[in-house]
Length: 96
Image (cartoon, rainbow, N blue to C red; front, top):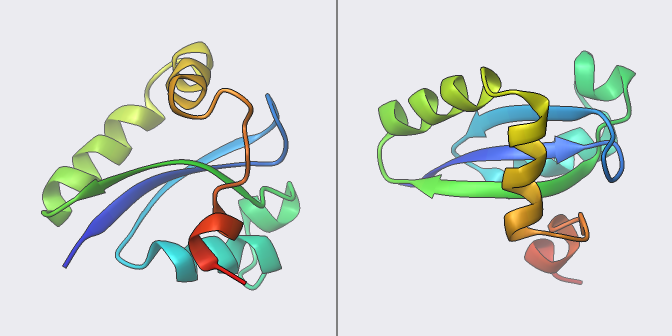
């Protein structure tokens, strides 16, 4: 099984949310559709802009914890190193 640490954004340079999941497509869809109440629904954080894959849940949780304590500037640099235009990665992963 694989686990993902992911970053969702409301728009380029907008509100950012960091999470961890064992089903990235399902979780990104839940954020996009506003299925669950909370932060991402309230702030319309719907675009998957970054993710990393892990084989161990402990490693994924530790990475999520570390990223959440980074400064906003570092988080933005991480996103832009992999996704400079802040494209929503969900459509290309989910397919037609």
